Image (cartoon, rainbow, N blue to C red; front, side, top):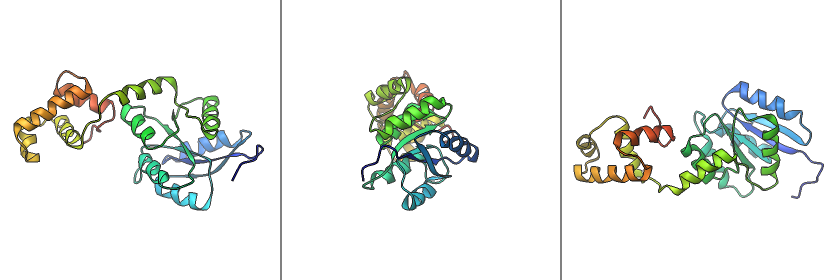
Length: 213
């Protein structure tokens, strides 16, 4: 249904921190042309709310307990008419940016983004444009140029981060030491690092794996 020019941009806020939700609702709710239609503390709650209320733009946190932001984006992509999504997060690791955009996010902002820029992003995304700040766009472009790691390489990368040797990794995955070595060489090449230790460190810094894994 076409929107009339005098209609508000309807916004849904999805974040697991109550203070963040309240702050965003207060900041955006007083702006001309914007209307906060609700807020949700998690992905499941957001999807249920969207069954009752229509939204034009979602401000979506990535890292939430239960259903995370990437899973919400993927669920939304399976619906015919879904809101445009701006990821609003405290994190800007290369992998977070890449996964969010790959999953359908139209914007990517940090939570400390100034009010003026946030409103500009909402308006741009609602109008059909992408809104990704220049420094984040540069990191996204760099990430997209690198070859993606395979699921096996991700498994091995997580084990490297735990300090396992090739022999220990091979035993755990029931593959030969030589096969593990070949995978490690491929990982080092794809991440453009010099050795296995640097590969593990870079993967954690870029958000490819988490430090707790």
